[in-house]
Length: 193
Image (cartoon, rainbow, N blue to C red):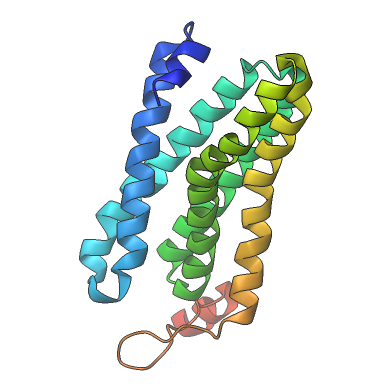
């Protein structure tokens, strides 16, 4: 993790926030998903907010770091796309939970955490593939594989998540019933009248 401070010496606070919040998001998301069925909703909410806020900070700081990346304009768009596809599923999950649609909340959180894990962990493992390539070529020749690796680290999890959600049955919650979907505006008006 120290190497990121070498690459981005001009923006140390952004880099620090990115690293710290990334660790928090990765850990809190894992704990939430690993122990979800054993955690009551009142205990689930605070770490869920920690995950959503920390991952949003990670996405925003990552976009800033990407704008300063050696990959130039392509890196700016690549890391911007990565940030967009981090923020949208995370906050769609928050919205779904707030309105009580827990099936959608689960699906959006799977997308969000899959993205978080892939960008944080699999991208770093991908660098292990890139380092030997850098030893064989000049550093300028590594820009294209680097950008492909970054693109795949945030685009493939979206595909994997939806394949997983399509192939797995709808989750049942403790007690054997699935949560009811959120009522529509029309149902709310009818119930109020």
